[in-house]
Amino acid sequence: MNHLFMKCSGLAQEKVFSNNYGAAALAVFEEFETPDDLVNMDIDELTAFIAEKGKNRFPNPDEVAKNAQAAARGSYRLPKTVNDSVNQVLSISVSSIRAMQAQIKALDKEILRQLENIPNTLTSVPGIGPVFSAGIIAEGGDINRFNGQASLAKYAGLAWTQHQSGQFEAQNTHLIKSGNRFLKYYLCEAANSLVRCDTEYRRYYDLKFKQVNKYQHKRALALTARKLVRLVFRLLKDNRLYIPAAD
Image (cartoon, rainbow, N blue to C red; front, side):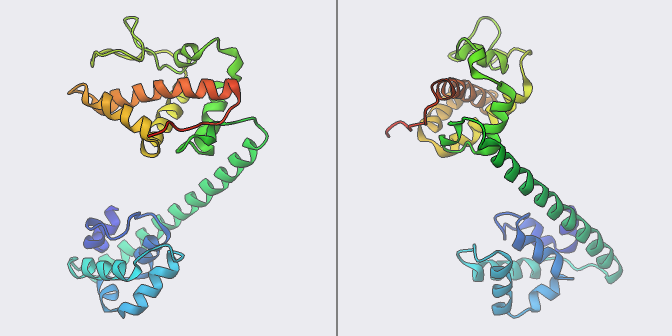
């Protein structure tokens, strides 16, 4: 993003693309040598270029094209020698991003293939896809080795000091320092995703967020992850699908 700012400050500052690491955005950053090249391109051609590189996923590619040109007009210009160097570095960065995206795609595909051989109902929970499910199952192991959801929570490090539980109210009470930090990571990330996809968990997160005036997100997310532990334990233990609560 620093290199992009040097090349075309407007594109780095304005929210032209919803994802600056998406295919269409990377193509624009790489294909156009200078802001003037972007500004001077026929708007219909630019719209077609963005639609093609974005695989026709933009609802309004013409609006994206106009915003991109407006951002380019407002960008400062570099001397040619500096601009050429920035373009070279930016091109290498884009190539590296694409290579990592390809690796991630291959890993996601392999994770999905491996999950087909493992009894798993976690993917029935909105927001918990193959990666989070695989992480929870891999780090948690056989669910039958835990005598209850509290044991699973403690193993994940989602338990509190001072004999507190997931219902505690104090904003300064700390999580225990022991536990499987990788399992804790996957549970917290899954909880964060679930908050965006499930109204029950969204309401719970919002409630815990508003209860204190310090560490709101950190505390609310940890408590939401603790709530998720109960769901994970029950789904895996009973091998049943998740049924969202009625609004």
